[in-house]
Image (cartoon, rainbow, N blue to C red; front, top):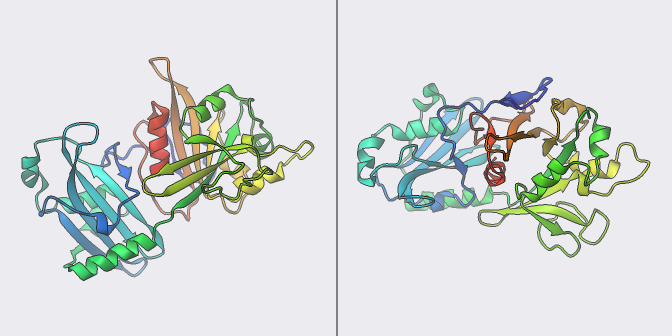
Length: 338
């Protein structure tokens, strides 16, 4: 598996661990949930690009890049909205702000003709300089753009479910992790209450995406739920909120949910490293390992590492360098984008 880490203690044990040290990607890079080719409406005619590239191994990839302005959180600045499409792989939708704000009328001078290749290289590690040199511009027409927008809409998934598992000091086995109960870790309680995973919801009568949780009575009283962009829903399977059964060493009911997720967030309340291989699951492919850390100003931040199976392709956005989030809202935004 692959691994992304900084000082975060993560025993990769055969995993790929990706680090938060890509100097080519701005830390404000964000996935754009509402982005489709139909939404790429540029205000700069020099940067509205569709490109394609073909290879024997992965077929044809089709990319779109457009520039427009955004006044979010400051003065107007240019941002690049990008879609990377490839057969049998989910499309990547990214908004990349300009690293250095500047007068809008200087964009033409700064962008230059090859800038779109640099943008594509900056948002995906597979687009090397060699690959970028083979990208070809595609001449489009309104009918083609309409069909492309339809394709983008069919590729969107609106419902996501992620596991969340607490690891307490000294714990090294999955039986211990799945047996942790609510209230056994003040740091974990604070993490949940911080809003990093959205809002606490009452399951009984819940009408949103429930991710298999019983909204009548059986699967615990509460969970954490979030929304993102235009219609995207995320339900978290929080281990300590799932029903606990006395005498069940493996806590089968809890593992039935979390073990069938693709992604699991691991909150480690302690100094010990986390070993993903200690969890026996055929479905868990990505682990987001979070350690609470004390910041210089006395507040609590979160150090993050990401480990994924070798079969999982590279995906963004990358971790910042160092991979530490100073607030829960920064972490929430990153997790939803990731």
